[in-house]
Amino acid sequence: MTEPAERVYPAAFIRDDRLDMFERRHPWVFSGAIRGVRGNPADGDLIELQTRDGAFLARGYWNGHSQIRVHVLTWDALEPLDDSFWRARLERAVAARAGLAQGERPAVRLVHAESDGLPGLIVDRYADWLVVQALTAGIEARKARLAEMLAEIVPGVRGIYERSDVDIRGKEGLPAAVGMLAGEEPPPHIEIDEDGRRFLVDVRHGHKTGFYIDQRANRSRLAGWLRLTPGAEMLNAFSFSGGFAVAALQGGAARAINVDSSAEALALARRNVELNGFAAQDEDFVAADVFHLLRQYREAGRRFDSIVLDPPKFAHSQQQVQSATRGYKDINLLAFQLLRPGGLLFTFSCSGLVSADLFQKVVFGALADTGRDAQILERLGAGPDHPVALTFPEGEYLKGLVCRVW
Ligand code: SAH
Image 1 (cartoon, helix red, strand yellow):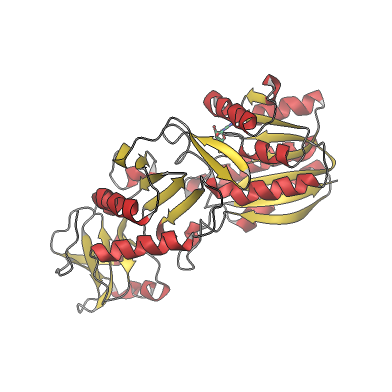
Image 2 (cartoon, helix red, strand yellow; image 1 turned 30 degrees about the vertical axis):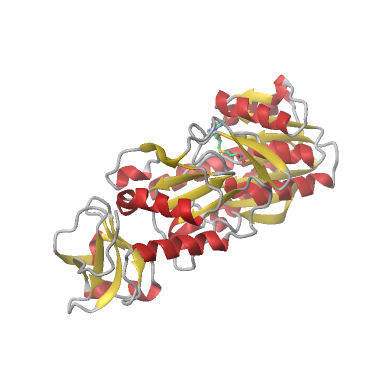
């Protein structure tokens, strides 16, 4: 889809009592804020937001099937939403990552949706390939054109693969979409460099776009902490492809035990451990339910020097927050019980609906039930290639605590 420079947009008229949202510049306009529409916009079409009197408020794209009727792209009346708009936003996002990923085969998030002024678009780079997620109808309608632009903007890109197989597409009335958007097919495993670690990424079958790029700096922090206590025995719960285990071994851990419910994830974790020059023992890759296995370890009297808890998102909606906090409390309580005195807990939550404050309270509640003492040594979040726009606090989802338990 090529966007012409000159055009008359359909209009959505905003209710008088909702105009304050335009001072906050939040990029989501919900159905309840709109009192009427002029024209007949299709899902994904560009639209102008106006006051009752027709004064300009913003422009964005429309979706009549989503509770978020309009995703705002610009608050500037002089900024038309033509091809040059999209190109400029992509260029800005890509330029902002210059120097963030070192190595010949970088893994870096190039576009982080709303927080990069491109609602609904995720672009991750793995060496010479890009992986795109189109989360909204507006991006879906333009993804081929955006892929063309990305191929021009990002140097050295050999191919662009799409992984739009995420639940939130359903809320936009969109089916899953997976496959090539441009260029060459990626190999089954793309090798990437991450702060001196090497990983194989399966962009077709791996979670999200294939790898948890957002944890890069936290893996390096973990390696740094473990260097202070060489020879540690580390438990990597919810290991996926072994990212934290490789970091722990590089940081001098004697052993890193990976636990995941997915046998495929563990097979890749094993390859990643070996790729970094460490010997892989069968017993260090355990296919099990973490909730169950930690209980078994506790009953058996097993203890560890450090534990990583990096579970999947537990809260997908406000209604799930309470059960999510129960889940977080359960695993954190077990982890505190399994740590030797002086041991380190690296505990994460990637549920955006669970705030950093609430998460800390839950971890405290877990500790209180064990009767032990613990300190927070460090607070962690997603890396700088996952920025959070100040107008979009929802963009902040990953939070972590490094705790020492006595
Ligand atoms: N720490 C990883 C990312 C973890 S993603 C990294 O740095 O790359 C969460 C992982 O938890 C997924 O691999 C998923 O397969 C696994 N998982 C989800 N529920 C689980 C459960 N109850 N027990 C064990 N693993 C689980």
